[in-house]
Every structure is written in C-alpha cells, then in structure tokens.
Length: 403
Image 1 (cartoon, rainbow, N blue to C red):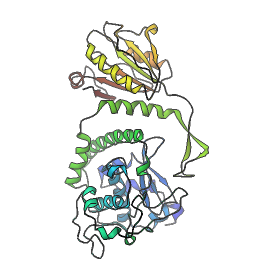
Image 2 (tube, rainbow, N blue to C red; image 1 turned 45 degrees about the vertical axis):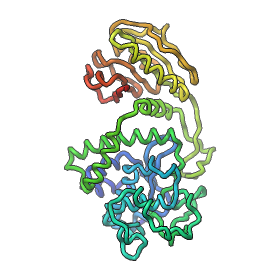
Image 3 (cartoon, rainbow, N blue to C red; image 1 turned 135 degrees about the vertical axis):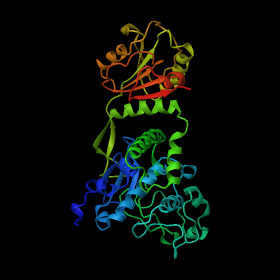
Image 4 (cartoon, helix red, strand yellow; image 1 turned 90 degrees about the horizontal axis):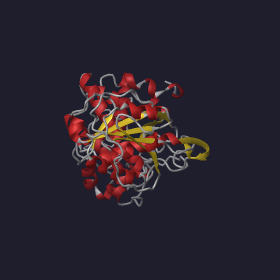
C-alpha cells in the first residue's frame, strides 16, 4: 500500500470491528497525520482540551492489520490509564516514566510491531519483570543499570523536540525507548488537564454504555475494565465540573493564527489568538423551594470562578426581571442574596438566554418544574443530591449535585 494512500481514519472501523469498547473510544479521539514523529502518539490539544492521536502514515502502511490494531489499542490505553493527563511522578516527565507506562500497557498486547517494550521478553533488560503491573510498579522496579549512562532523566517525551527533529531511540538506556511519542504530556496547562480529565470520564462512560449494548468489551481484560471503571466512579468534584463547563465555554473565544507558530507542533497546529471573552449565563432559581444554604454555597463558588471568567447572573422564579440581571465581573467578590420568591418556570431563563449571544448556561435549581424548551447554547444543571436523584424531568444534559 502506498504511503500517500494510507488514511488511518478509513481503517479504524474495520480494525475495531470486534472491539466495541475501543471502537467507541476511537470515535471520540481525533486522528491526524504527522510525519515529524516516527510512529504514533496521543496528547491533549492545548487549544480545545480534546484528545488527539498523531500517526505517521509511512509507519502504519508497512504494518499488518494485527499490528495496526495493537498500536491503536496501545495509544488508547495511554489515554484510558490517564498517562496523558495525570499520574506523572511529581509532575515530571522522565525516560523511566515513559518506559514504565509502555510496559504497563504492552503486558496486555500480543501483536505489537518490532520495538515494543514488553515485560518478560527474553534478551531485553525487562526479561525478569512480571507482566500486568502498573506503571508506578515498573517505575519503582526497572533495572537501575538500564539508566546508568543516561544523563537525561528530565527528558521530555521520547521522540520529538521543538523543531520537529526525531530523537527516538537516541538517548542512553541501552537504546531502549517507547516506540511511540510521549512528547507534550508534561507540558499541558493544569486547567486544560482538568478539562480533559472531566471529558475523559464522559468518554469512558459513553464507551462503556455502548460496549454493554454491543457484545461487551472485546479484548479488554477484566482487570483493565475494573481499573478503567474505577477511575470514573470516583466522587465528582462539582467545583471542578463547573470550572470545566466554564472553560469549555471559553474555548469558543480562541481561534487559530497563522502568524503565530506553535513551538511544540510547528506547522501542525497554528498558534493561539484570543478574540473575545466568552459569555456565560448563570441562572439562579430564586423560588421559595430553593433554600438559602444552596444559594450561599453557589455564590461561594462563583466568587472563586470569577477569577476565571465574567458571567451574567439571571435571578428567576416564574419569570425573569431584566432589571435584576447583572454582570459579575472577573475578579469581583459578592455576597449571596435573594431577590425573588415565586414559583419556578425554566422557560423564563432559557428564553432570556436564547434571545442573546451566550456560550454557556448554568442553572442552579431544585429541578422542581416541568422540562424547559431547548437551549441554543450548552446548558448544565446544578442542585443538591436529594433533587438530583429525584428530578422532576429527564434530560440528556448534565446534572451535577452540589455537596
């Protein structure tokens, strides 16, 4: 097959035909051609907080289908095991960590192309290492002499530097390197990582639901399945979710600029340029059934969120009084207040927001009213656990419990 004809996006559905879970994950990860890396790699896009996979068509074109499938699964495991967004030792990328993450993943793969690092493989420094351990375990138990001549413990990634030159398999350690690219993992901003981590939970939930309806999880071992599901069962920090919602709304204010060169992915991704401040609406249910403690808690978090963005606050009950709507400016601190105390009608704030140009809409409420009209921008609901567990209406929009 000619390199120029190989488009990974045209093959993933066929390759993942018997892998319902991985197929669902694959559809949620963008795949892009990149000739500056020798094989493949995954990362979080710093502009969109979306997961994306880069691949070299020349590398993929010469692989068998079984090898292509394992490379895909290898990259997806990096995402699923949160190697891309979390769990780096003390926040630092090192060559040891890069190798440890690959060993943890490759224990579960049987058809990797030449160059994959595999625990227990004879003739390698990893021959005495058991399979199916975590990246942290391998990090603590890798042979010390493997890195005795490696003076680059702070090595970022495994293959690419800022000008795109390949440095794979060129740094100490007896020439043993991950076969894929890990560059960029340690450079993602904290806020972007948090957004990506929340997004990953949604991706896994959706993929797990799809897999349950479509012949199960395929080749994902029970141990991996339990580990993956455990990562999304952790208690949700509603404050992080709220920040995530606002930051993803703010992503609408960024655009590409060909005049700015992206230092890490030059000419693959353009630089970033901020055009305007995103508009986020906060509708606060002021009906009599919403208690003062809920209002006080929400205002407390908004004081913290005002450090990130400016919002429009819309008090409402059965209607919206435009005279009571105000702008909460970035950096301001405010005391909570009650200005209305009637019934509840969600169409009132939804209509107000739909008639104006907002990027996101958050509604604090007890959910005790009929389902509202559709929102023209992304909308999220927040309430206490009691009301979240017994909502008056059903919706596919996100509902978060404030605890």
